[in-house]
Amino acid sequence: MNLKLITVIVTSLAGSACFGQVTQQQVINTTGGTFQKDHFIVDWSVGELAVVNTMQSANMQVNLTNGFMQTITDMANIAIVNTELKHEDVKILPNPTRGILEVDLITNQTGSVSMQLFDMLGQPVAKKEFYMYGFGQLQKFDMTSFTAGAYILKINLQLYQGSQLKSGSFKIVKI
Image 1 (cartoon, rainbow, N blue to C red):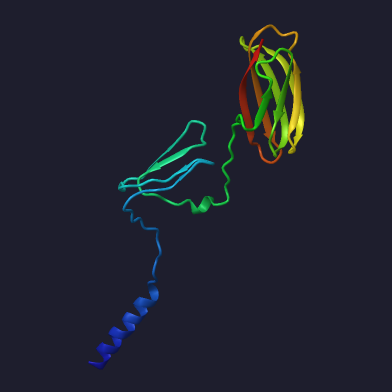
Image 2: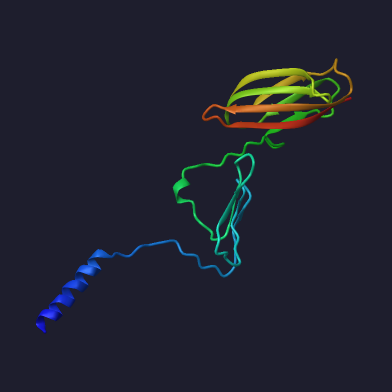
C-alpha cells in the first residue's frame, strides 16, 4: 500500500510540474465605453458575439472589428498619422480675393510641399514647390490676371521621415 501511495504522490507532483498556468485575455463586459476624437478610436460593447469579424476600408487606413474586443499588443509601436490637411493646418487669406492670395501652411512637420491651383475645368493655372522645415510657411499666389470664378488649391506635403503624404484641397474664390 505504501508503494501505491508513493506512486500516486510522485505522479501528482510530476503532473503538476508539467502543467503551468496559462494567462489569456478574457472578456467580461457589462456595458460599453471608450471614445477618442484625435486619431479616432472607438471601443464599445454591450454584448459580445461568438464570432470575430474584421473589415478594412479600401484605403487600408480603417479597421473595424466586431465580436470579442481584442487589444493589439503586437502593434503597440505603430502610430496613426492623420493624412488630411485641414483648415486648422492651412490659412488662406483673403478668400475671396481680388489679387494676391496668401497661403499660410501652419504645421511643425518637415517635408516637400507642392501647392497647385486648378481652375474649375481641372486645368493647372499656378504651382509652387518648396521644402518645409517645420516652422510654417507663407506662399503667395498673384491672381490679379485670373478670371473671376472658383478655383481649387491642392496641397501635398510629403513628410521627410517615411513615405506618408498629407494632402488637402481648398476652394478659392476670385472676384
